[in-house]
Structure formats: C-alpha cells, structure tokens
Image 1 (cartoon, helix red, strand yellow):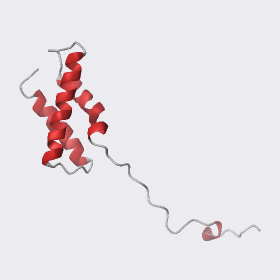
Image 2 (tube, rainbow, N blue to C red):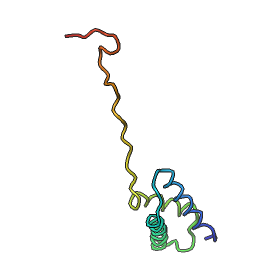
Image 3 (cartoon, rainbow, N blue to C red):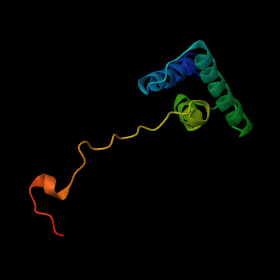
Image 4 (cartoon, rainbow, N blue to C red):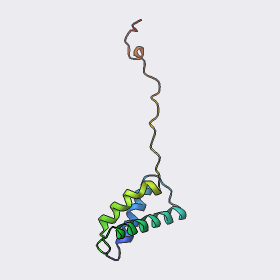
Length: 94
C-alpha cells in the first residue's frame, strides 16, 4: 500500500461527508478513522493482507458509511397551494 493511500481515502470520504451536510467534529473524525481501520481489518481477515489498493479501500469504506454516519433522507415539501381541478380552469363535475 502506498504511503499516501490511507490519507487520500480519508480525505475523499471526509469530503463526501461534508458535501452531504455532515458537520465534521473531532468525534466524527475519529469515527471516520475507526471506519477506515475496521475496513482494513475486515479485508485482512478476508485473506488479502497486503494487496489492498486505494479503490478497494474506498469501496469498503463507502459500503460501511451508513452504519457509522446515518444521513437523513430529504423530505420533499408538500406542493403549495394544493392542486385542485378548478384551480386550472376546468369546471367541477358533481
């Protein structure tokens, strides 16, 4: 593994989180480090000890991301004003 691989993976996942609206505090930064460490341990246990490349580590980290950083889904606002048949000029059928 290249010297800067872990740094680049951390920066890419960190940037993804901040762009997603997650405020990165010390606690969350440590959680991100733990996420990357856990990804390395799991990959080592799978039998590929020294062959991990940057793309594989990013893939493992992104797969684990929802467990460490749950990102709430956006809720679309209700249309305002509500659409009624008469609101676009058609007569009502009673």
